[in-house]
Length: 272
Image 1 (cartoon, one colour):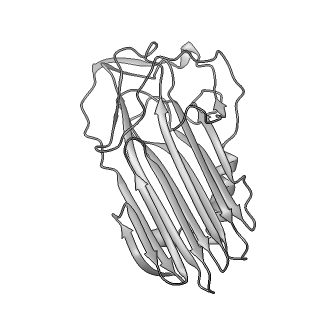
Image 2 (cartoon, one colour):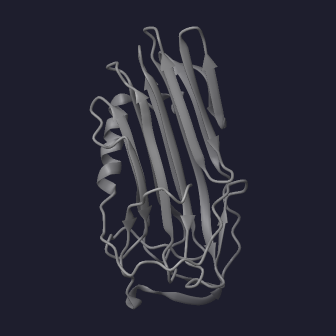
Image 3 (cartoon, one colour):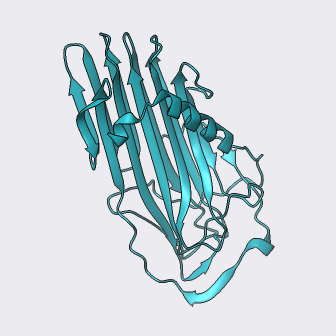
């Protein structure tokens, strides 16, 4: 993701009382493989792709839909649909991938990682059925002395009834103040990405999503970041972090998008 992206930072001071460390050596864990779904439907009938697909493409004289999930050099999603007749073209993408901070001992990371995410929905939405949305989240899968971890990494949408903006650029750092858990070494975490568009008559809609992870090597010496096979991330750099920034409740935005997307059924393709 370009360094010019604007970011919204979630930061909280980590008190020394919250740090727990254990003397036993880390046990190597094979990370689960990334999973993909990319599918296109026309009037709720699947016409291309499905579970296990990283791309989908369909076109006719009146209908067009395509989507691509890339895992290198960064996980990204691009999706688009256009409709000139009375059909509804739906394109849905989903991806999950896993990561682990591997260290010589199991402990809460001295410097919590930062999840940098951007997403957008653009184009022309003129029909009552037209909509688009993107969202990303991180959750704890296995292990955890830092408490159950669950954070929204950002969301955006467009179309009738959308409660959010059409784009976002956000930095999310786990903190004690948020109460949503801290990242520790030798535990497995999962990032979930979703992007989808519904194009009705006269609509031309595109959506984009791009998350990545960074952490401070100067504070976390000897710790490495491992990801699911075939999934990339930006090079890690020892960048000093600001002393303090305000806490922002991203969960509200994610809940708003979830409810809206259920009503719009924009990601029907993923379950087809």
